[in-house]
Length: 250
Length: 250
DNA sequence: GAGTGGTCTAGACCACACA
DNA sequence: GTGTGGTCTAGACCACTCC
Image (cartoon, rainbow over all chains, first blue to last red; front, side):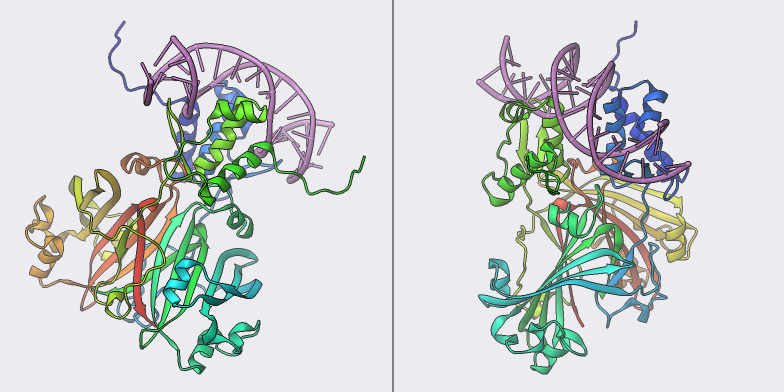
């Protein structure tokens, strides 16, 4: 009867999840493959329904699998869009365009829906940055291949853009940045803050996110060449759909 | 008996979770506050244990709450470290150092543990970028205030750094970049790819991540001024501990 | 219609925290 | 010791998908 300080075994649901995860990460189960369902796990391991569900929920919450009602649980895929930060310093100019991760580089077309434009009282942080209590706000949703991938909320100082096309649905050729240029306030410098977190419920709905998908949050300030902040843009990206790339000298 | 096409009510566990979430996001429940426990929810809503657990698990998987065994479920806090990409173009130089999100800017000291240095056969992606089949690999873990926040794996072309301090624990003054400089290969340009995803199990352990915490993955390539890639560094950051900042001109 | 995942109940035993 | 969350069983009904 050896009773030594054995490291406690992980619970059953976790061991099952570990096995399935390894099958996914090793490539035994590939993109879109069907995982063993609840009934299969119950039979195979002699466990209760809730325990089988718990095992599957681990993988779902890790973003490795997606449940489909009435059908099964499937291996999830990752095929991101590449978003470049700086364009001028783009590393294509000095490297061979090398990248560590694969991505869909063909410029798939964006579509924009759910445009909303309003004049609002700015939130504290935005008011502080733009030095303006009132702002024009442009809310948009971007989709690629019919799937929503990004939410964007742009804020402009109200007095700066009043009576310009920036307050209209159709901003004209070149978009809002061209209109800012018309005003003599062309954006020249950018500061981007990047975070990641789990999505809020409305983001889950608007981006149609499965469980286990974080969002990347980008807060971007656009400055003119003289250092005047002219736009604050908060973007919410489906993390499973994006790779961000930033190139810079030391 | 009106029986009109009512939008189906969300399940109980979700309604409970929604209520708790609102309490957290509105500030009624603050950092570190205790949420109603399983027993409290069972009594208050007249539901079974598993249902109460399910409601709490929603918030836990969203990263809004953290369970503590034998104690309760608590509201989680977010107090990130700010990590700057470019230093030369640092936006302090032309802006007023404005930022959208709060962060702990006081430079809290890093500690490094778990240093591992090995000569290895490179993974495909790394071999392709460095144009080198064999690499020296430096694995490190960084902690702040005693809490692990970042894992880092640096790869260097084996033939380039052989017999230098880069293959030693003590890399000398200025660290590995200074040693690369000694070789006439000082890094001058960087390309960073940024992703976010849920952590793998070993990352969860090494970073001591609670459920509902994504990781930010940074893949960074360092080039010399002549465009020679000299380092590939993959960093895994606790997303709840970081804000990344990138400044650039258009 | 058969099979799947989604929700829910009513129990049980355990390890752990806290007083 | 009491209360907490962690794991697990054995059922149930439902909505949905696929054949």
